[in-house]
Length: 337
Image (cartoon, rainbow, N blue to C red; front, side):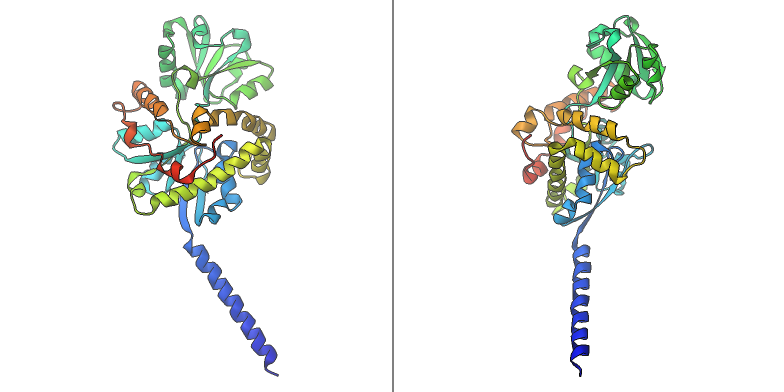
């Protein structure tokens, strides 16, 4: 008559042990915080998808993903220890280095800068030299780089009419008040302008002397130098690369995943699909075909360091050879795309 209670007791004991084992397993996961380069859209697909699908957990990681946007300073968050990994434009990393911070950059999402100048087709501007006699709208946040872009391409500022425009203002180019605007994101404003009935030419700044590896992945140098950190970062990168492989298999599906998942209010499915279908070309290059996805390009970083100095974002030209490392990429072995 004691058989049932004994069996119940035994089952409860097994269940309790299983629960404790599960708790121990969760506690054994290495905690990391990554702050994105932007809001959770297709630009940030890799970290978001890797977390949602358990790729990080499969590598023994418990990753917290922090969205970026207005008021989020990735460099400050990594410097203060609020985030382990930051994803941001290289100029901001170099500016931090110039102020005495020490970072290690271990991967880069984009091989070619998606930052662009967008011009109406009717303007006839298809390259920088065509700007002479035209009207250029310059975003208030882009003044330094607009001047440098003109200088690098042999266009005197006096040969161009300029107009200050707001950071999200496409009305001036749609209305024909300006011929071109700088800067734009290659797969954002151009589509909005064309949706308003104005065909455009998109001129990548990276093709004309201002290339960078936008959305570079960095950590504090002292974290990188700790025993075991390289292995942790390799696990992180392996998991994220697995997500990016899915992106390249089905860009439209990647866009739908983010919109349907509600990771950020207001994402438009058509725009996200458009961006996803264009984005891959900026993430791949002869280098990624030779070495692997997200590979770092020392030549591009050297160019970026010079441009950051010329734009007065840094005090002197930062030596990027001490910042970049391909050790994590070599450990993670990303696919060649």
